[in-house]
Image (cartoon, each protein chain N blue to C red):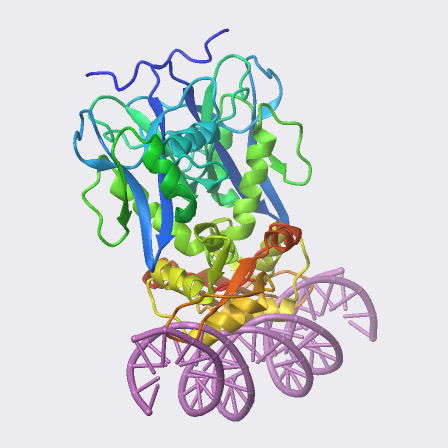
Length: 230
Length: 230
DNA sequence: TCAAAAGTGTTTCACTTACACCCATGA
DNA sequence: TCATGGGTGTAAGTGAAACACTTTTGA
């Protein structure tokens, strides 16, 4: 195989911003670094890209290693190529952004995990290694933008969920209170939520209905944008 | 300097999708390849990333080399990391996407250009090298999406322009006819266009007014989204 | 019966959409 | 005077925003 260039090459990594949601709190998964640089501090899960795997595969591998879950919503976020990102050598990092259902992750993760990994509330984060704070901020902006035209928030929720969770996710991500009445009307108007014949029980207030996201119906819309501006 | 990894590294390149607009036609700049692979066929301008330049700098360098113009609208598009992109070796490419004013480019380009570079109408493209067709399509989608909330089309137009050019760009990019009346109303409602006391002359119909995009006013809005859905 | 959250009705206002008409110029 | 694109008025329809009220449960 001929070389395409004689230039020395930057190292290439993937880093993953993994979001989860639970009880009104938006969270992300961080790992504690076991080696220098930034040994002991928290960082986004990530690693080097191998020659025989695509970028998507590399990101998926990292994601699986940390969460133990497959079939996760994932997309490429942005590529960070500053010169001084890593004190050791030039490292270019392709960042990915993932949404997981915490209900499915918890059990698996604790069993398979060797190094220390932990979920942090997005509002109570530690200092992060490298430029990971910047990557995270880019991810937040992407998330904020995307939920206004794609119903991706359901990737954060279990199969059956309550309406107020949906609203709460939007409020957390958009960082503003929303009008409950109008939120509900507009969200239901998409026709993508199925009302189930089930309710939450044992709550000391009017028991809320459970809903399910109709993924098949959404896929039939075939990538068409939906108005989800609240 | 310690190495961060012992993995063999993929090569890293940048490729630029450079858009221009002239007389109702959306165009992109392509270069003819002088070496194998794909020798003789057309490709996006691009090249290897050097160790001492950021990704943005690398893209800007390529852009300047091809067009001779500085201060161009440019943003990172997406990173393509398939395994078989280049038959020689593993190459990951960070694609950029740029909008240039053809009126400013033409003169400069012809004088500085060594290799063959040419503007193609987006509707009459040759076969492209590598996965560049795919990259271009991604760029088109990004452009299509972005003009509905950012007034970036003015990066394609000279300082003074006629209203019908703006509409024509939107129609070309969105690939659908628009209602002239409503387009004008909504576009003017943004308050970002200044009507000048000047008109086009020597046309055999009612001479159109010239407009100018008020960039300063737009920057004061500070990244806020604008509704430009037509 | 009270607190807490679920769930609904309705009015107002703004913007979008559609259509039709007039205007200014050079040939 | 005609063809050509430039430029405007406005009614009807649709959807967003705001607000207040009713419902259901366990404690």
